[in-house]
Length: 131
Image 1 (cartoon, rainbow, N blue to C red):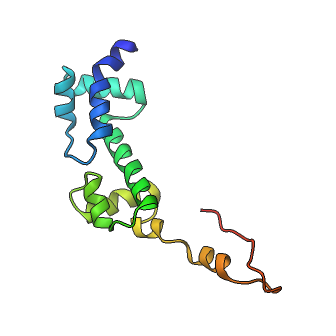
Image 2: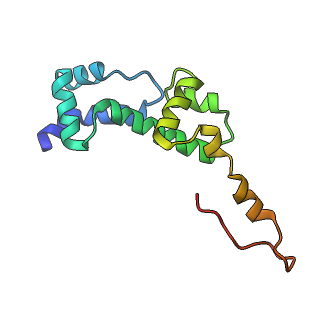
């Protein structure tokens, strides 16, 4: 297993640090000195997902963080996470989370009502809606 990882370690670092750039499995495999098939097999053995799936996961994790922590536009986040356009990003985001990026960023209507609506005693409600 150690030999498997050493051949793909640099590719994994590249995916984690350059997810905002175009990443091709073929190029990552070449840099690792492996055929695309060998590279993908090693990735599956180590991570239990394909190299392409790892790229998508790293990009999606970065997008989720940016949606939570910044006020940047959805298009800017899409670009910063390596998506060619907002539409491609939205499709991938919805496939991964079941929501659009905007839906994920926006608090649910019931949540905002519960957080701001006073209860019958004039105090704010303590009910919260799980996210």
